[in-house]
Image 1: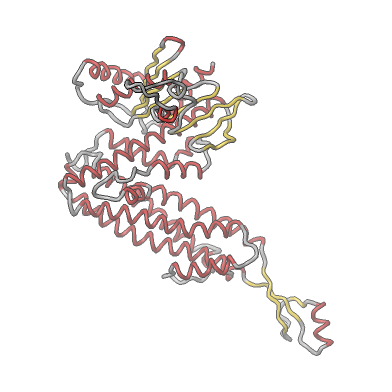
Image 2 (image 1 turned 180 degrees about the vertical axis):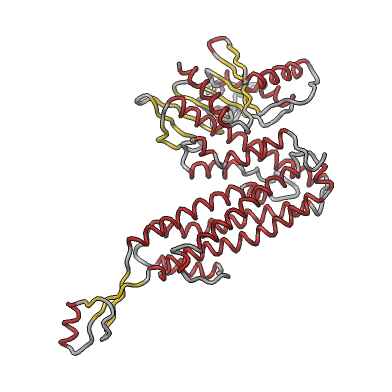
Length: 474
């Protein structure tokens, strides 16, 4: 494979890196915190998933871009709030002096004069010298120092990794895909460094004096001084939280650097398998989150509704004066028929309800309340895998007594198919990709949709899902 060639899945993977973290441009009505929590929780591989790496380190590495992207938004917002607070706040110092520079505090001055003491003078102090503003600039300067160091290390690691022939020769969703992620993170780091350097050169931070090589010990001392005060504004509380977010971002970036560095030191079978597993895990989960975001946006648009309740891995969309739909990710869309079933081993022993509950399936995305939709999202062009997914979607239709099942895949399809079912799946999915999707009307007024959602066509994907929601509610 030439270094400049890309498979369709690699192009889609790059699109997922971009789209999932910038979905707001399509009108996603989810709070930023809910999106961050969702992405962070879902991009965490199971323990002992890898032999070459610790699962926690991989989790930090693949969430590095999310950490850097979130850090930029948080810092820009806090600086803006600190600037606005500065306009309304004034600080005063009081001293006894014969130098009349300031305003005379007459009640105290009269008492002093009767005692032959100097007048009491009030002078306006510079708020910028207060520890809160020193802390804000210190956290930003520390972030710049950390990001600059990580930018240099990551840039060197990427350059060495792509120069290794073995890495370039491997299929795109293996180590090469991880280098793609690292390259996106590197771009975000450079953007963030430039933004932060501009911030500290503008008012008010330009006039706050902080050492360039600020350390965490000094920052923590400032926080201790600030916490000793009886009250502090909200933006200061956010700066204190950001101190720890900067440190978390550093850990994520260091983990990413460590993994990319390993790629140019060794490319054995174990390492290749582990990195390939990490990239596939990342791609599959990102596509599931992407499908969830497409669905939420489509539901809100189709119903002209609003989100008032943010649930754990889900939202409730209100519409039409009191009606609502619940959209969930990775959770059961209501009760499974298995949970109310009776079962026993062939030896005669009855199986408990608790054991039966473990057999229930969990569709990737679910919509339920007024209607029930189950959605399976598969980031793959593998015929065997997508054939299984087609039957899995049908099984979920029955298990959850849903109105509609939707199989979502990026397309197009590769491979020949080794049996009759796979060959038919290939024809079906290829035609669905060309025609924008397939609707199958089943018995009992149920429907099955085969829906290609390429992550490079987000607006079109939202519109397709929106039409399906409208039809089902009509």
